[in-house]
Image (tube, rainbow, N blue to C red):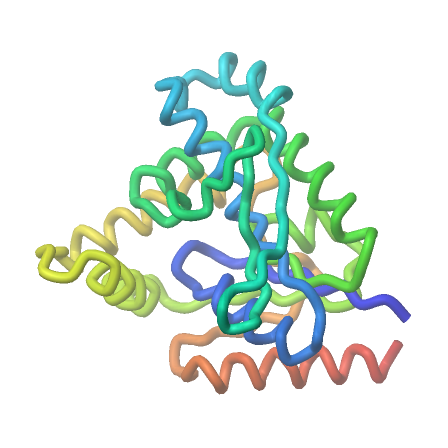
Length: 230
């Protein structure tokens, strides 16, 4: 029986790293769908059109987004995201890219293009997909649906640590990170097209008081129980 896992949740919930660990334990691939929107954000920033829905919607048809799994020196395969043939993985976690991605992800034409690609990839093999609308839009019939979240403050603290690791020595204010996180939540949860929400049949996992390993084990337990019921 094929296995498809949909993992949704807000920014800063740790979806990418948790999804990586869960997929590795299960021996399946992990598709970070947020990286695909960030790739579109990279192009929109370069062309200075991130705020122009009409232009982005027109050009996204020609901005082919592709995902490949590249094996590193440690033997681990990791997702690399390409757009127009260029590997833009190195730019995806920049703050400006994240903000542009949040903007372009509200455009229906962008979402349609990304969803089509995601569904095609998921149909080809067992896979875990994480994002904002996986259980509700991309994989409505997924074997297991997880909604991963944490409190605003916990998500902001985690994001702050990530920023400090990426930019050592830079003075980053917790209140600023918290405010920015809430601003990014707003368009995700209130956009007209495929807003972020917990699917009715998704399992809620609140990691506010869980360690990384505890969160992974909790999700693996739910996956095991769901597969046993199938």
